[in-house]
Image (cartoon, rainbow, N blue to C red; front, top):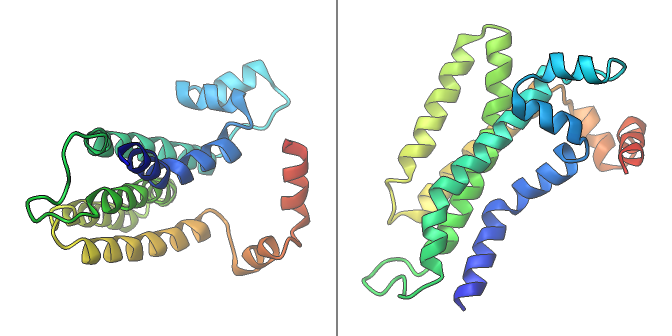
Length: 200
C-alpha cells in the first residue's frame, strides 16, 4: 500500500507539471537549453539566425514552471519519503488523508507558480506595480494557509479558488480571449491545429 500511496501522490502533485513540460517545452530542445542557461536571445541568434527569438511570455511560462516544480519538490519530498513507511499517518488523531491533501496542495503551488510567473513578467514589462503587489500578497496568502494544517478543506478550497482566478488572469495576460478559447475547445482553431501537426 505504501508504494501505491507514494506513486499516486507523486502523480497527483507532479503529473500536470510533467505533462506541461513534455507537451510545451521539451518539443524544442534548443529553446530548453538556452532558456535554462539564461542566454536565450543571444545564443539562439548566433546558432540559428533564421529562428524566431523566444518571447517574454515564453520565458515567463518556462520560469514559472521551473520555479513551481522546484518549489513542489522541496516542499513535498519529505512527505513522499514518509509515505513509504514505516509508520501510519493518523494514528495520533491526525487526518488519514494527509498525503492526499499534501499532494493536491503541492499541485496548486506548482500551477500557481506558472500563473504567477506569467502575470508577474507582464506586470514588470508594463511597469504595473500593483500587479506585482497582488502576486506577492497572493503568494503570501497561499503560503500562510499551509499553517492551517488541521483544516484541510478550507485550505484547499481557498487555494483552488485563488488558482482559478490566477489562471484566468494569466490566460488573458498571455493573449487569450473568450473567442480563442471557444475555437480551441471546439477544435476549430486552424493555427492551433497546424502548430500541433508541425510539432509532431
